[in-house]
Amino acid sequence: MSKFPYKYDINKYLEKAKEIIFDSYPWATEDMLDDKYEYKIEKVGGVYEFVSYYHNYDGEILRKVLTWIKSDSDFYDYIKDMHEYSIQSKNPKYKTFKVPISCGTMLHGWYLERYEFNKHFYGGYSAFVQAGDRVTGGSRTFFIPQDYFDGSFDEFLDKYVKLVSPGAFGMSKEDLKNAEGLKKFLGFKE
Image (cartoon, rainbow, N blue to C red; front, top):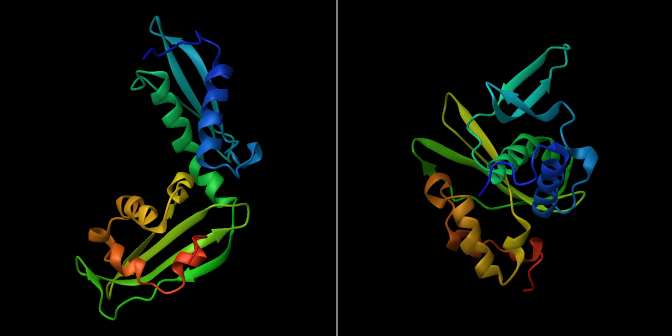
């Protein structure tokens, strides 16, 4: 794959990146993208490179030459990564399903404290996992790709446990399959 199949018109690459983002987040809109980023194609040391500019709140502009990008698909992945947090944070959750946790579920010295699925206002679902010990803790949100919902609930779970590994978070496919009401919450027929 070529690094610059559309030559040096950055707008063509940005439009393609937006198509990919909006395919992953069909509910997202242009105004959900992080407006602190700007992208250009510039000649650096005699070679064309993708360049990212980040506009800090204090007015400082950070320039990053993206020399590690070897293809246009690398650039699209980078753009998606830079904007996912902004997109996800602008889509608030409005309904939550708390997965019952077996008392004492422990993962690598930490205890599973919360495991929930969330419906979001503009569409889409996410999973939220929180674990901790007596001193510290951590949490993580996983937005669930829309195509995971194509097919049956069982097929969904097969894909889902690859995204949110039971080994890392202590909630197996069988635990989720047996969580009463989860199937319906996620939109699958009982």
